[in-house]
Length: 315
Ligand code: GDD
Image: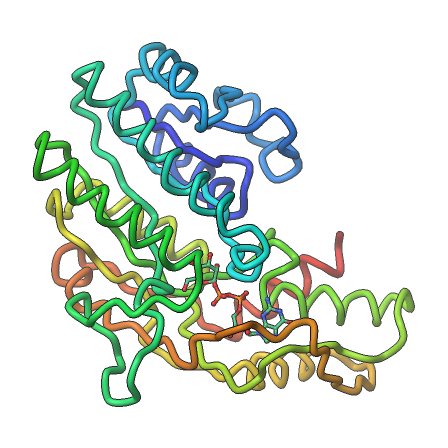
């Protein structure tokens, strides 16, 4: 069995590659010319890398003709919400057009690949208090350009399933974190700051943004297990939430991380970290996915936080 992971050099891509290789699946990953290999260097002897710009339709088609994958995990995207306000057009182009090229290549080559599209809980956007935990049927009320781009990816998947019968599975994954998480994302950013303070590289001040926000965090290692199970068990054309079902205020993330540190640290709001509009609460109902696959998250929130802090301590 051959799997293609778009965006393999990223946080989720590297964990997914490890997981698939562990199952004896042949793995090829796409990367951009300037991507760092640091998260996947240890896997390079066992997998193939393909330098491919998803904005280049012909390059995508050439790559797909070469690989002819059975499974495609489409992860490559601009995934940082704040960047989508700074560069809305780039976010739209990268996330939407890249996927169009991928699905067009599947269509033109007549491939029977199963495609998993990594959609996002950000698509739900503004959620009323009485709508949590959010089901797949909840209205989508996006409040960032990123969320709009993910809705487009989501519905493009639906359209290619309906129009061409492609085997497309759409997953709306809630926040996920763990070792190798990019330093711009909340828990990883705080863990990195704490590790740097412990090493004496920074004064003992933790800079934070909106600590009132509530999110549903799943460990990335549980998420990649879910993606693999989705390919075997989920129905084409359907949409599935992947979540922990638990709600954590961002101030709780800070409290737990600080409880693992012996250094005295004060907390300061950094106004540049506040967003033009921020989703207040996201908690997912993953019962549809559970019923289809039997998947449940296994790694406790506290364990992920410890692993994340240790990851930055060792960097
Ligand atoms: N990044 C960041 N940095 N966020 C902070 C900070 C900070 O210093 N302080 C508070 N926050 C708050 C944000 O305002 C937001 O409410 C929450 O923490 C989570 O922020 P992020 O970690 O940046 O994640 P996100 O929820 O915006 O988006 C992530 O999850 C989505 C799934 O719902 C990303 O991984 C997306 O790519 C993903 O689709």
